[in-house]
Length: 138
Image (cartoon, rainbow, N blue to C red):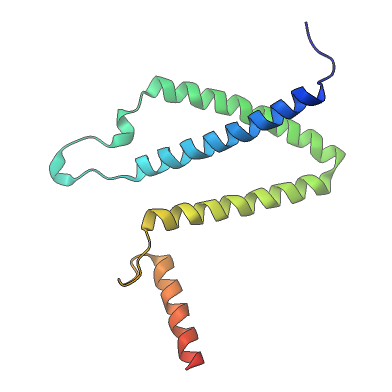
């Protein structure tokens, strides 16, 4: 039987489930991203860690994510017809969150070096800016 209306408790459960799913997908994304970025030791003659994953499982996950993505875009399109500014604000907020998340992942991947010379482009730029600011203060 199809429900015509969703009760408040069902709606709250759905919202909670969506938040949990979003957090889980973000965690899986981070894990898969860094697994793919690992390079094997040249002397160890082993395959890339990402190549060891079950391809059938990954394609099933991809299909489920693709289906959900299409459905979510339909929801967003409908919402944009009802409240275009609200959707624009939400999309802009999401873009900023993605950039922030990427920078945090990058920072975590590069590690924190206190006494060593900066090794990444971002660390070199940060060190140069910090050095210039210290020169202006002195």
